[in-house]
Amino acid sequence: MQEMWKSFFSSGSFIPHGHCYLWQTKLVWLHVASDSIIALAYFSIPITLIYFISKREDLPFDWIFAMFGAFIVACGITHIFEVWTLWHPTYWLSGTMKAITAIISFATAILLVELIPQALALPSPAQLTSANQLLEAEIVERQLAESALQKAKDELEIRVEERTAELKRQTQQLAQTLSELQQTQSRLIQSEKMSSLGQLVAGVAHEINNPVNFIYGNIAPTRDYLNSLLELTDSYQENYPDPLPKVKEKLKDIDLDFIKKDLPKILVSIKTGADRIRDIVKSLRLFSRLDQADMKLADMHEGIESTLMILQNRLKPKPDSSGIQVIKEYGDLPKIECYPGQLNQVFMNIIANAIDALEEKPETPSIAASQADFRIIEISTKMLDSAWVEIRIANNGPGITESVIKQLFDPFFTTKPVGKGTGLGLSISYQIIRETHQGELLCISTPAKGTEFIIKIPISIKE
Ligand SMILES: Nc1ncnc2c1ncn2[C@@H]1O[C@H](COP(=O)(O)OP(=O)(O)O)[C@@H](O)[C@H]1O
Ligand SMILES: [Mg+2]
Image (cartoon, rainbow, N blue to C red; front, side, top):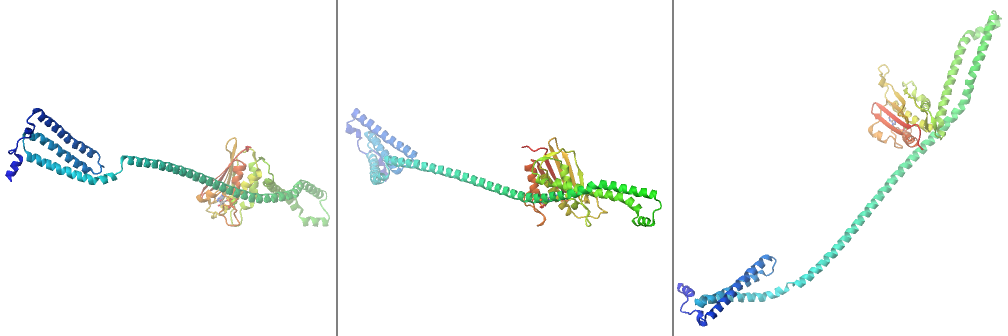
């Protein structure tokens, strides 16, 4: 074995290849140069191939490139041996190298043949380019479709938004119309109620006015005549100190001395009564200014007083209650340009509500009663500045809770039992103050302490 191995690497009894060229220097060097260059070229090609494969990771059939590489390197080595054997006749070694080259090249050739159908099945660059172009065209088409879709979606969204806004607007309009309708309805009901009340009051006032004036006007002459008659009886008594028995008896019967003393008192109380009726009639007439639709200058205090007068019977003490104390603190107010009948209606609503609230206040025994236990309505007026007046109407009733305050001025809002409350008083008052008189109506309340309504109105209404 060792022998065989040795002869494999030894030159044996062969003669070097250079002998075939008769050692002609030129021929020998021609072969040396040509074989060396071929070998160099063969060694450089696999390097290029390896570089190519390493850069193209997705290269199909990359193993065939490796086969090519091995085959070419083997070819290169055979050429090196061509040069070597010119001087060193190791023909077994060079022959074996050729045999290896033959195996690699043959295997490569067979595999290549088998590979061809598969390689042909790969798309050519032209096919790839056209497929690419088709794809690009499709992308452009899809992009166009997408942008058209987006545009349609945007338009749709805008339309939906517009519709929603429109709907919202319509709903708001409807809600507003509804509340306007409700207000108009409540105003109509209340004004109808007030106008019939006003007519009644005006009618009664007018009917009473004549007889009262009649009584009032006749009091003075009656007093004069009676005085004259009394003077006459005095004169008779002086001049006839001893009258006839019949006359004496009559004098005793009628008790002339008492009549003389009592008659002036009676006349005074008739006058007081007549005065009072005159005041009441005046209040009724003031209050019933409702039917005077025109704006005019009016005294606020007169309006408040006439309202209090009408509500008098609800304020005064009754067998089962101590009555309501009205404390007034009137400031110096000028006459105000307003609709007096409507303002009286406001005073009426607010004061009547205050009385209603106070009637709910529990009565305490009068011995232990402190100021806070009394039922009090406080009415104060003042000028806020040169253009505005303020009227405050407060009561120390049970007050109003937070949840009720929010709905106070809503039409038909009432906490009173059916038949007692209509829930219209404050909503009408609010309109009269806010809209007709361009003023403000506020309510401040502390539960268990009381409630205060504040009316602010300008002394003249802007057109
Ligand atoms: N001074 C007040 N104190 C307590 N609650 C009041 C007062 N004024 C008004 N309210 C409340 O406001 C509600 C609405 O009043 P209003 O509009 O006059 O209607 P009504 O008197 O018919 O109930 C009343 O039901 C009552 O609950
Ligand atoms: Mg009321």
